[in-house]
Amino acid sequence: MLRGTSEALTERHDLAMLDLDGVVYVDGEAVPRAAESISSAREAGMRVAFITNNASRTPTTVAEHLCRLGVRADAADVVTSAQAAARVLVEELGEGARVVLLGAEGLDEAVRAVGLEPVGVEDDAAAVVTGYGPDVRWREVMRAAVRIRDGLWWVASNTDLSIPTAYGTAPGHGVLVETLQRFSGVDPVVAGKPARPLLDETVRRVGGQRPLMVGDRLDTDIEGAVATGVEALLVLTGVTDLAALLSARAQERPTYLHLDLRGLLEPHPEVVVDGTGAICGGWTARVDDGRLVVQGQGDETDWWRSAAVAGWAHLDATGDVASTGDLVGPPTPVSR
Image (cartoon, rainbow, N blue to C red; front, side, top):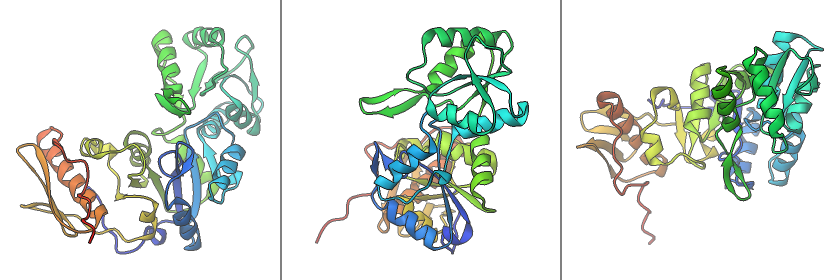
């Protein structure tokens, strides 16, 4: 269940690990209030890292994009699943090891940066590493699949099934991972969220003793934080809607919830659960005959907090996800 705190998260945590798409930007454009919130968090003494499961772009490319959006960022502030995958490889194999690489520039740069040698699918190698790469050829995928089946160690940058593109949502690297798994019968070591290596690599590179994961996806950002033992802030600027929130399993539930990155800068009220429902601020949420009902008035974020806790309590007690009916969010305030 959600946790309350009387202090701002910038005081409780010294590192914010920010997912990018859905948190800092959406479809390449800045999320409202993101840049200002990040700047204020830094002024309060919080370190900020930008982390992404996208293994195709280099940290420099990501940082340049952020700067164009008004978010100050250096390449050292960006940590990718490609870098996490490279760390997994070099810690197991040592520098100088030869690695078959299926991916794009970001993966190639990360592998070389830790002293590994990327090679082709026909070359002698100690492992194969895969990541999203639109120019990877099918014959290379086939050859890598056979080598994985025959015993070549495999590290995958991530298992994201979809990626946003200029022409809509498209298949992500996870689709290739599933194809290779089905053919070879082998599961890869995964570096990206919700697996642990990306968050560990972020702390190693950026520092911090009390990290906070900030994301918009329950099944990658939040689940990864829970699995790593890191507190997490869910923001509602990305893909999580009310129905998804109410269906969150225990391992997908955040520590804190806010509409956007202003949640870094504020205390978080406690949600009280009693016989009437889940109460936060002026809102009371409960599940009646399987349907979520929220009554009262007050802060918009408190509406979401009370709804989430009531829904989770119902899910835990019954095993059923509460119905939302026509409810999608708090009522729009009437202008005066």
